[in-house]
Length: 161
DNA sequence: GCCAACGTTGGC
DNA sequence: GCCAACGTTGGC
Image (cartoon, rainbow, N blue to C red; front, side, top):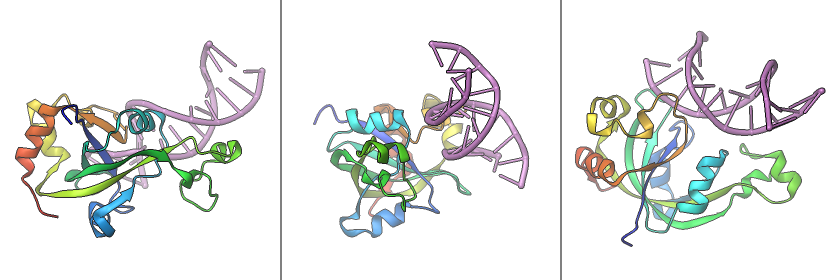
């Protein structure tokens, strides 16, 4: 487990919040609906069981990192792409008969006692390397460096769910 | 393979 | 609601 990696996943709290994840059985859900190749490739090729993930609320009043989750199941097919009734329906996948997208299962572990807002993160020079603060960076799944992770952990004071 | 048009993201 | 940035699509 020495090669554990760290990640950040965005979610829009109006659609699916950290609290929604916590409320589920085992605090666990499949992270489906990712429809971007770069994000998919991270999940498919690099996400390993035991990796840790910051959950980030985007497109909301105060965008912020709000908690921590753990990867509990590695990549498997995201079949929500095949169902026309689903929000994340993907006609191309349906035409192929197999989803081109994948999901992983994540389990909520800790809640930041002090959510780290995007505004605060931007004010910390040591975090200027984060993809999150780069202009125009919309990637919904991003790698996080260990030193960035450790600093955010210290600042966010993670506690029980 | 190029690239214009279009759709989405997401901060503000 | 605005709109810049970016990704995808599809005609050629």
